[in-house]
Image (cartoon, rainbow, N blue to C red; front, side):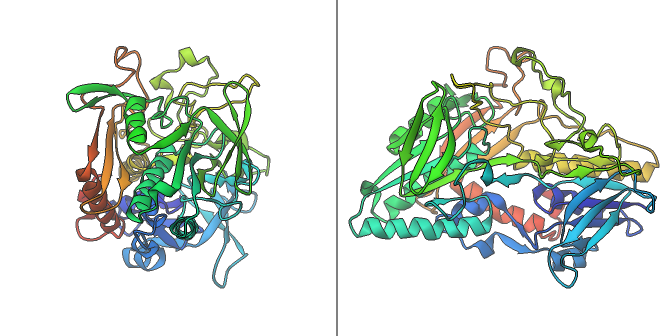
Length: 485
């Protein structure tokens, strides 16, 4: 009998737990350890943040589902990692602390045979002074509670505009190294459409602020894509959308301080500037959770497991940007020091950024961190689960399932406005996610034909359909596994 412990119940953790439970007999134990009581379909937070979808529509409680499906569940947070056990516990374990219920505050050694670290990122708001959701007129849509709060803040500004007061709205990234530009992009387009729906668009000035060098970078160094019968750069596509909607933009901006209604930032020219606003939604920096690891003699071995995020089978050798390669990226998400530990999704440490690194004239890094959200999170979680399943069934290590972001495609539908007749979506498919400049030297590292974009009402319908499909899948309804990651 094997015991598989999954840390985290987000997209990666939940996908891994679902596949492990479905494919392994009940002789094997699958346990999820997560401080969250609910599963949430994060992509739909955008619609919660504009008041078009209630948060209850994007979440459901984990405990009843896991009990029904035979998955163990501990509402607890990981504290420290002990991959060799200790002087009193022979088996490897994670020290976890319960965050709710009768056991709240107590700690437990959760032993395992296999460990999947799917803890995702820490939302590192404190990395930017004053960037606190709900304070200084700034908001977030990173969680459903944040998104609920964002709608209340936005609605208040909308009501003020209806009463004749003009407003400035600022949306984008709130740190020089933020990622998840895609979520901010969706939100700014949805906010713009909602202002039109409420007939106050003429009362608002909307500005995009981002650490991207060019619009449409999205932490992936931009892309050359097929757009209808044309070939278009992603920055040209996003510029077209922003110009059509009268959205201004500031790029190459590293926000470093927030005051009440004022965003301070540094640009790549080394200039320190400010942008005022009445409502702002700024994505924070993501970071690892700061976990510590110890060997059986209680010696600190954190550097064997973590490099901010968890170390996996990537090439972390420091080298110039010109020498970066898709071969640097992991394929199995296995920790090289402890072969029974894996980290899919956002939990793994990337070998380097995907976008070209840039510094301001003052030496400040201003460029996006690499995204690993959405589709890649689900795909990498499933392949990790399949490798563990194969290893258990064969009785020996099996790593036949592989998937590098350097040979993996991703489909993204960015909501550009909610509504069955007035809605819109920007559909972008990228292959590969990490550009391969050797294989595709003339098309910016991507395969033209598999990298394309489109805009229209059909994109909204598809994104809404995916919302319901993935909630169905997450609830493990009949034949859920037929829905791809």
